[in-house]
Amino acid sequence: MKKFLALALAAAMSLSLVACGGGKDGAGSSAGNPSSASKPGTDVSTPVGGDSDFKVGAVYITSQNDTAGYTFQHHNGITTAMKSLGLDPADLIVVDNVPDNDDTAVATAIDTVVNQGADIVFGISFGYIQPMADKAEEYKDVIFSHGTGYMANDTNFNNYFGRIYQARYLAGIAAGMKSVELGNNSIGYVAAYNRQYAETCSGINAFALGAQSANPDAVVHVNVIDTWGDEAKEKQAAQALIDAYNCCVISQHCDSAQPQLVAAQNNVFGCGYNSDMTDQAPTAHMTSAIWHWNVYYETAIKAAMDCNGDASKFVENMGGNAYYAGLAEGFVDASPLNEAVAAPNTKAVMDAVRELIVSGEWDVFSGVKLSYNIGEDGSVEIVKTDAPLMSDGKQLVDGQPVDMDPEIVPAGGPSVDDGVIKGSMNYNVAGVIEG
Image 1 (cartoon, helix red, strand yellow):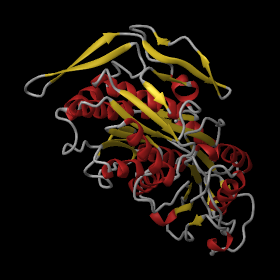
Image 2 (image 1 turned 180 degrees about the vertical axis):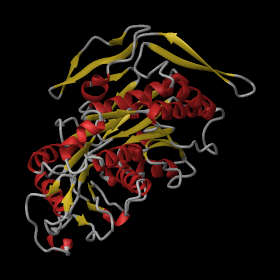
Image 3 (image 1 turned 30 degrees about the horizontal axis):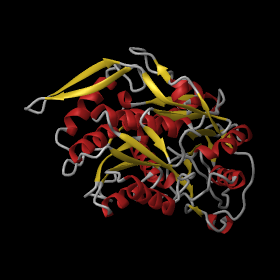
């Protein structure tokens, strides 16, 4: 699974600010001047000053002022949810530009938002996982919610993620149909990681299966950059895919719009991620697999507000400590198709497959493959064929590729379990080539 990073520092406000369960443990300094506690490479919010009794804290991997990508979409989701719930936007406490490979920085960032009065703290990067878990134990009267992770407790700490692979399948359809139109079977994919994480691996696989449903001969070349948010590496990786494999479409699982900009510069096409990137690359970008994070954030903030002074009720209010939703709940989707650059009839095919997934009749990683018949009037017939879901015969174990049974799901079999998609998928489907 999109993505995961770290936080920063700032000074603390007084302990008189109250969380869902009461006053917070731990004291801060430099009240009213959070920048005095910052360090190079980190940013902090201005002191909160809204009228709401309830305050929301957030730790971001990049800037809250980003105009596209991962942090942008999370920040937009939180602010949209707060507005819907009638909360003052001034009561959002943000520490941003926090790397996810520095547990000390993450922990300090959490201390900052807690000491400034946050009732619930959202950490959006996978790498924040251990500090989030530790701080949930330290601050029992504060609620902690971690994006893309797997740790949780039964009281004040949960995790949240979604079936983004469903949206990636839809984006893959756009890529496959474009490759057919262009007569070029080579598609590129800039990936933060691949088989090291089930999130990235399942996303690559779902995108490839979507592309192959429209173009059975499509090959997805994956360039792994080993980081979530390095724009220079994202740019270089996209260019290398075009230069080495003549890729006609560039997709991505990384944080910025750089791969889409590179696609535009090379007169090829693209499928972005996290947010709609058509504004960044209007001559190239077709669609993005996107998150409607506000769907979750509104649910979580409402559940936290309903604690009525007892943070230990949060997980109960959420109905469990792991939130996982998809197309059916409106949590993920493909962004509006840029029909000016997409192949003809792409939207009709994507809409038909979306309806099939939302109905629960079919899901991506099953032993049933899709193909499409398009009528002269643009109508779409989805053809379902029982066929085994096949891997490339390798899986990653302890960092090393080892042989595996290439058949993942037999012909006609049900989709692989959620636990595999979220936690243990470490193989690529046939037609994916890394390197």
